[in-house]
Length: 392
Image 1 (tube, rainbow, N blue to C red):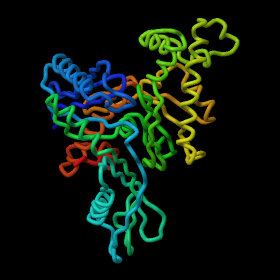
Image 2: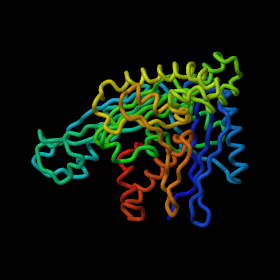
Image 3: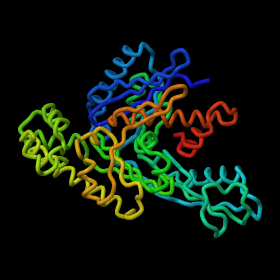
Image 4: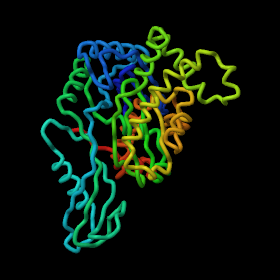
C-alpha cells in the first residue's frame, strides 16, 4: 500500500520548484521540475501578479513533463515572518500513571494557548517531559506522579501572508493540502539522528534567505532566518566585476571561495579571476558568518556536531572551510537524501533540499497515520511522528 501521487511546491526567491512523487508499477519515482522565480524577495511573495503568473508557468511545464493533472500540493513556508520559541505546559496526573490521553490533552491545550490573533501555528513539537521534579525524559508514558510537564517547540507564521500564499495557489487551480515551514523540511532530509543528539545547527542557504534550525539532544529548540543568501552573493559579483547576473552566477559556481581553499604555495597557479571572486564573495559570506554567530551565540559549546550547510548557496566552493575557520568548529555541506519504499536511498543536489524535504515530511505524516494498521516501518514512524503539525 502506498499514498497517492504527492506534489510539493517550493516557492523560492530564485526558483519555483515542484517535487513530484509518483508510483509506476508500485515503485516510487521522484521528479524535480523548476523554473526561474519571479515576484519573490527574501523567500516571500513581493509581487502577487508576477508570482501567480510564474507559478502557472511551472504548473503547465510540470503537467506536460509528467503527463498528469496537478490539483493538490504541499507548500513550504519561509521568510522573516516565521517565529519560533519554546513553551511548557502542565497537566495533573493525580498520582496516576501517565497515559496517551494525558499527552493528547496537553498537546491540545498547548495548541489552544498558542492561538493568537494574526498568527497561525505551523509546528508544535514535543521536546521533553518531566514527571513532578524528576529529570526530563523523552517518553513519560507509564510513569506515576502528581503532574506531568511538557516542553514544546513552536513555529508560527503570519496568518494573512499564508492566506495570500494559498490564494496564489488557488488561482492556479491548486488546493493547498498542507503547509510546512521550510527549515523543518530541509532538516528532515539533511540531518541524521546522531548529529541531532550531539547538538547541531543546520543552515539552508537559499536564494533570498538563509533559514536555520538548531537541535539539542535530538530535538529542535530554535529556528531563525537571515536575510543574506545566494542572490545577494551573485549581485555583489555582478557589481564588483561588471557582469550581468547570469555571468556572475557562472563565476560564482566556477570559482566560489576556491582561492581560499587552495594551499598558499599553489594559489598563484589559479585563474586570476579566482582571487577577485574570493575578495568580493568572501566579504559577503563573512557577513553571513557573523549573523550566524549571533544567532548561535546561546549554543556556544553545545553544537557537538557543528554546523551543517544545505541549499543552493551551500554549493559555493570551499564555503565549509571558510566558515569552519570563522566558527572554529566543524562546518560541513550536506546533500539531501530520502529513503523511498522499495528503492535505494536517493541523494540529490543541495538546491532541492526544501522541495524533497516537503515530500519527506508528508510521507512521514502518512506513515504515522498508518501506525495502527502496522503497514509502515516503525523506524520511519519514530523519525517523523513528532515532527508534524497539521495546519487547520
